[in-house]
Image 1: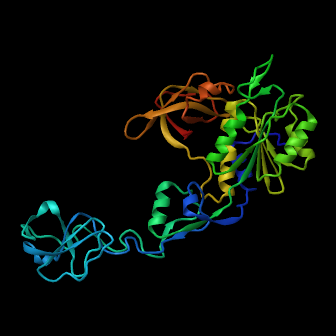
Image 2 (image 1 turned 180 degrees about the horizontal axis):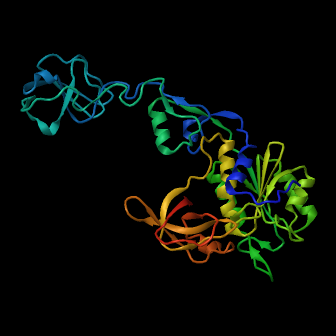
Image 3 (image 1 turned 90 degrees about the horizontal axis):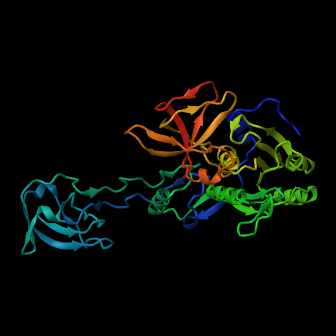
Length: 401
């Protein structure tokens, strides 16, 4: 196993991971199934949007040069039912929102600004050309990019693609990910606990995180601290695109994961990062499979995933910016710095002034305290160093929701 003597920084570890990521095979995906997927190819509009000049209001289509004045209403235009002829001088046509503005018309006046009687309208003021008209292609033109490659598709993207006539998109395949938790002491929720036993939570956490990153997770059964059981389970997990283990990556007599992975052909790229919680994180590769070994404490596992696993899963799908997005905020309380390691402190983000989010650190920051961590929606980055970050000082944080 290749072990680096010095602890890596977070940035160094992320770089070493992303250097070994290759985008998965591309596949067409129907728009109905594309939510959360990452575009591999820029999607372009099939039509102008809007595809015709349309009315922005319920009102009357007319020629601006005929206003003010009294105009007969010669036809009524509904959405999806264009006028039967062009609008002539001195005429108006009633029109619904979204209706095709008839040829000859250059403006629409809303119903509330006219007086209608005897199938004619009285207009007291001049109506400017272009008023309440959505021009053809005013949003986008056919052939223009709608969503760029590398974008993860959110609901608004899907709506834009549908409106622009795009029926399917090209995406990288979703990574297959295996999750394996280790430890003789682990039991499933609902089972009776014996002496020294605990309920297994990390597998559920990691599977949910993987799914939220776009992967297809498979939870393997937890394995006891037994070499043969580890060898069988790890061998199965290594068949996936990503293997994420929890526990067994430190230096205790029952920490078997790294040694047995090496026997199975995993090349260890690094072990241990200067971060708290989660220092004994490991990363390696076997062929194209990315192998992550996260610590067994649940908060360490959760944080390690966000810093190291999620970027890799996004990069496998071709995400253009897979690294965590830290945002600016201000501390509601002072935080002590660690001289040797960057810290990720659980906090609640709440509205501050117009420029800043206020970050309130939670009590109980130990890495085993998953119940307290459940109340956090932010991870505050506290850079290594002496002293403390004072209350009110600027800080960067990563959202957890």
